[in-house]
Amino acid sequence: RKNKQYVVKMRFPVSNIMSFTLLSRLLVHFILTGVMYGYLLCTGYGFSVYNLQFFLYCPLMFVFFLALSWALAPMAAYSRDFENLIKSIMTGLFWLSGIMYDPYSVSVTWVRHLMRLNPINYFANAYRETFLYHEWFWQDTTGLLIIAVELVAVVLYGSHKYNQLRKT
Image (cartoon, rainbow, N blue to C red; front, side, top):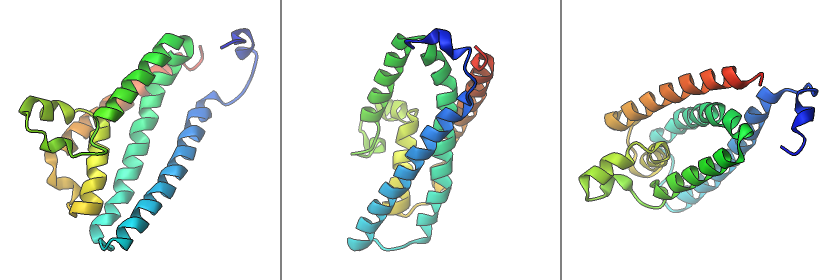
């Protein structure tokens, strides 16, 4: 941002930077999932055929957040305020997500329905259902439908915005 005048004169693969960042985070995700799985094996959960759903959820999460970065990163390159807004929103979504608790067991109905719209909730609960509760992904049809609609919307909007602002 300090030397914006040089960016137009440089030739480097800007489109690959987000992918490399996400790939490094994916590697960290694999390592942490391995640690979690080792802990589950030591505590008596053991291997289950349900655990193979990890190979569905992990790429789905990777594609979702890649498309989200396509949508938000080009706009954040223009405005530091937008970048700070996105950081604040993502932090809020993380803390409202069901990482440490089950958001689908909240007693207030409208809050429970609102929390289902948070994509981080879907992925956290999917991992919980896969490794702890031994449930298939199609058993939560509402969550599956919500994440499918959100994924399609983010992919379409993200690819449109990225292609529109790529040259600029």
